[in-house]
Image (tube, rainbow, N blue to C red; front, side):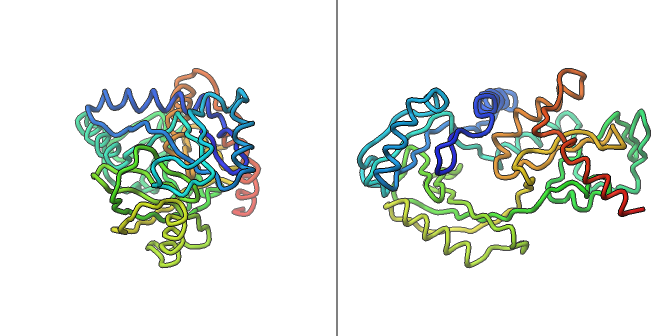
Length: 311
């Protein structure tokens, strides 16, 4: 809920974090599976000046509810490099995304509501009242296709940009009871003593593979953060779908109102998705509006240019 070196509260933190805590807990009950783990984050200070800044900011109403404790000297028994102390933030944790997705897929399969298939756009018949695709009829279709939007003939004009990130899976000789976060994060996984370290940000690298440069960067930042001995077990990569203003892109196509986009969640999909998917669902049922900050309307001028270019 608190990000950046300037101690800013994350955009819409109150609404987003309240929604995500409710959503994941209720979804665990619905799916009968554990995948959401609330856990404090510990962010070490790098200077006396930063420590003082946090001390001053922590009394403000905008940050106070998210701050649990501030240390002015080293904590956690020397497991982390924090000679100037650090801050513990609440309303944080991690989601085991693999377990979450597998449980969701099982649930949908049991409801006969899941089909694993590549969409053939040429087979889609788009009418004003409905969309027909093979043996399926629907009033609307929602595209949540990430960076694959570039091959979507209806939304390939939307400015969703790929941002590659890489992570390391490591073994730690000791198990911290908080998430360490400074330069990189050190987050538990579903396996005992295995932790995820990440992540890099590289908009210029489109290779679908890991890189030596990213491994070196992550390892160097990890050694700057923790003192616990570790072993690197695995390196992974992924592509985030980002937007120019770092906010989701949601709404209907300028010409085809029954074609909907839900994209651009970037690096914060786990925290953004619960609130905005709920807002989208309510809007589709005629309740409420999609807020302007995330509405696709803000990029409508790009579609006009795209349409003119095609002509």
